[in-house]
Amino acid sequence: MATLSSKLDEWRARAATARYETRHFIDGRFVESVAGDHFTVINPATSQPLCEVSAGGPKEIDLAVASAKRSFGARVWSRKAPRERMAVLAALSRLIEKNAEQFALLDTLCMGKPISDMLNIDVPAAAMNFAYFGELIDKIDGAVTATAADAFHYILREPLGVVGCIVPWNYPLLMAAWKVAPALAAGNSVVLKPAEQSPLSGLLLAQLFVEAGGPPGVLNVVNGLGESAGAALALHNDVAKIGFTGSTEIGKQMLIYAGQSNMKRVSLECGGKTPQIFLADLPDIDVAVTYAINGIFGNMGEVCNAGSRLLIDKPIAADFLSRFIERGKTAYRPGDPLDPATNLGPLVTASHRARVMNYITRGKTEGARLEFGGNAPDLPGCFVNPTLFSGVANHMTIAREEIFGPVAAAIVVDGLAEALTVANDSIYGLAASVWTRDLTVAHKTVRDLEAGVIWVNCFDHGDMTQPFGGYKQSGQGRDKCIESLLSYTQTKSAWINLG
Ligand code: NAD
Image 1 (cartoon, protein in one colour):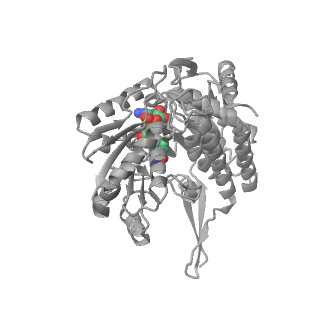
Image 2 (cartoon, protein in one colour):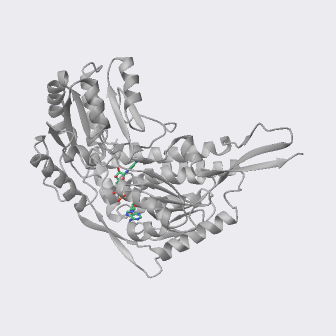
Image 3 (cartoon, rainbow, N blue to C red):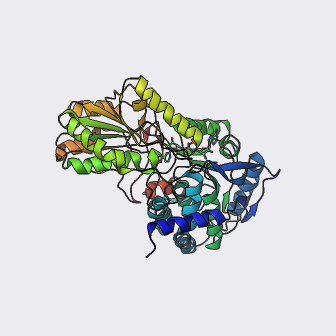
């Protein structure tokens, strides 16, 4: 069996010799930008340039949308027999699994995620998305309604047309899968705009879709900056819906674009400031601390539902914090994300690291107590050490704004009522958790928390049936689940006069 270090050598060798496709994927083939424009992707683990990627803008978006519109108009996908479309998405799911190592390499090199996370979490989950939504294709029905005897009324569910998917860099392949899989399963044609920090895995995904039997032009990918390629896609009059995952700020911009263009539908999965409530009667303090550590330091804290606010009941606060400090200090160690033993990679870019460090400074100046971390390790990449602040008040910047880094804010609360007030005192409402032995308290807390996803005595658990999305400014719409697929369809009512 290969040792971990020899595996690291193998990954480094692969990374050194890897060839990446960097052009757009339009109409079933790779193409350069019209004027040959490029942008540079920097590997955040080394701070060295990784590759030059074709930079798209309005012209490339026009070409991709035209290709998607043509394929939709020709009905090569939307009217393909359901079982044939199911077979294509099932084949794509298998191809994602088969190419797991290549996907892992692409996202890890671009955005610094530990390669073991890619192999254990992102890639299997992306494959599962295509399998799940593929399986749903022939399970979605229309309806026949009750009418008077002189009429027959049925409701058809139809695809929307061209769907634009705009996704972030924190789970590049998986966030693309969350949007593209239901959009394709519903029969739409798609233009995907990956984040400029992580443009490579979307290209491989589109290539594999065609290899799986998907018709050319049904899944197109245009890379480019948000303000050029992203804006052009969201403003396009031939795009019927934007499925967006990203920041709350840009999510709001998507709604403006829709109003400025064709009133396209918009679904938004945006930021969060997830509270985890640890009540004094929690079942097992060590288990809860483990979840708390993983909930904020996993994926470098670059997780929309990162458990960034720890609301700890007064009677257990000292014990909870001392266990968190003892284990949390060393549980996540920064290292080369290509090393299968690494569980903390760099942050995505130097500017993002500067932003996170700025929040740490704010935490200190606003009076929170730095328990550990708060600095960067002596490594060449964009690393930040896992950080814990205690003595946090909910009005402090580190409790209010999404940091998107490995920074936990511990807030001591006096019982459930205060915990709920603090938890809900946020513009965000993506997720929350409560830890308690009391069944009644658990159910009441689920009812009273203002968030789209609530976990009881666990954190970040779920499967494809779980609607994932936010209350308040964490967004609108749901990923995964049947509701997501339906959001890429529209109903048509057919009223037939039998009189
Ligand atoms: P971002 O909003 O900066 O970018 C997201 C996407 O939007 C990228 O593809 C980007 O190129 C594009 N974009 C940026 N500016 C644009 C503009 N003016 N017009 C059109 N498109 C534009 O977000 P990010 O930094 O890539 O990702 C981090 C954010 O994503 C965090 O806020 C995180 O919470 C959120 N997120 C949410 C979920 C969820 O399910 N709720 C999941 C993952 C990430």
